Image (cartoon, rainbow, N blue to C red; front, side, top):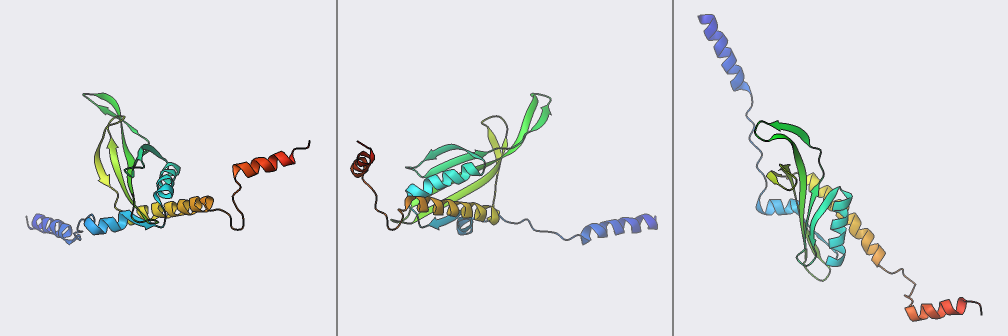
Length: 182
């Protein structure tokens, strides 16, 4: 009997010795905004298509994009797992990455982008549930770096080359006509 009591106390003591880890709290309010939002020196005409382009390059299918409201949403691709339910039969279960972005002009040359990534359980083609927010700052940091690079490329493409003057269509037609041998 004493041996059982000692063994039981050792087992209970070993469970009590394990460190208890507190569940990491999800950021809220301003902390969440600091992770999810970034300001850029760019207009809405540059920001909006840059974000759409980055999301498409990252594998998201854009489901909605409205430049007037500044809202963009997209769904990423994911591989499904075959499941069986006794009531509904065969089905697929998959976790699908989803993103929404809000773009707003905050001044003549300043725009703000706020991204929100979530992982959602897909139950059918267009039915999602059990969304889990992605709060990892590195995910947002990487996304904002890609957006910054795309903005840089777009602004460079939109800028005229120094030392050259744009040629009007009438002047170009005159030059082309003069180049044709008569």
